[in-house]
Image: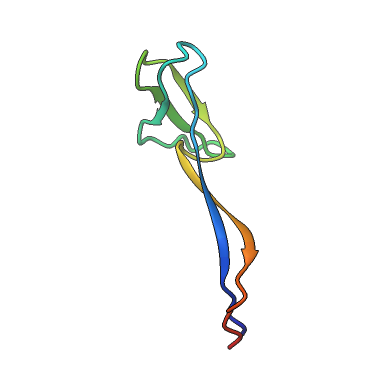
Length: 74
């Protein structure tokens, strides 16, 4: 197995409340056991509620930018 080292860029993805436009949706800690599962979120400013399917917000995405020249090939 070869090891490789990469430079990465990290992004945080967040979901602004579309009701008040001021707060952010945050998970309530509950999971609805539907198919697919849903994650209830509540705005931390106005209290608006919504269910999200994919995952909870905020979440982090890491993308490969480029391979480093000194990657270890072991």
